[in-house]
Length: 235
Ligand code: TMP
Image (tube, rainbow, N blue to C red; front, top):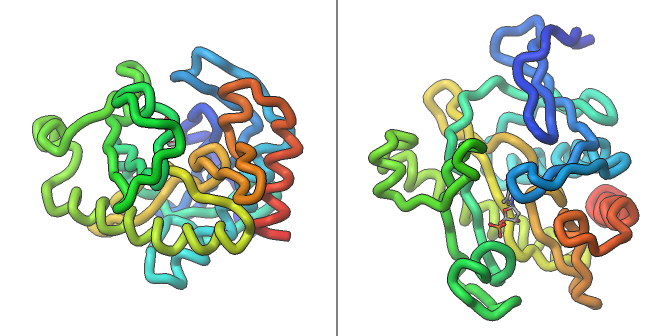
């Protein structure tokens, strides 16, 4: 039995609790949803359960493909046990199709195929609104060394290579996604979550949005869509 200790940190979608082991924490998934740097807030019923179960399936799947992560085990519906990492404050976004912020920023056509995939870095800082940053900015801010940055890029592209066919088999196009990494024993490992909150999926048959864009853009059928993703990934 893993006993839950004090709250270490509360983010917008998750809480992190200490455990009796210094180097392990419990990640608790909430139903709270935010968009546009928390200007829009709401609840997606059972989202925490869905995101915990999906992440608890994808992390071991990636580990088998040689991508280490913070994941140790799923504890219950809303909690997973993870290694305690020091999060690198750089959000790594991988894009296979143009949508979302890149369409607004660069005026690309919605749905444009991006091949080879594009990597973007965002500075994980809510007070600044998570701005897009360049590798030179990352060096200036000392967020990561050039070799760590290369490692982030390498792992992100490999994760894309593994996850694209995984979702394709389940009738879903992996359009784009956001990753966070942490330092653990001097190593860079994948952290945070991989879920419909942090990825965009388009149904291959219908083109329907199957992710948090349903909440961001008020597309309706939000809960049903999260359940459908869960069914396709874990069912
Ligand atoms: P973007 O098009 O808004 O930049 O989003 C790119 C990807 O990153 C998309 O899959 C959604 C995900 N994402 C997050 O996980 N957290 C965020 O705060 C934002 C803005 C995007």
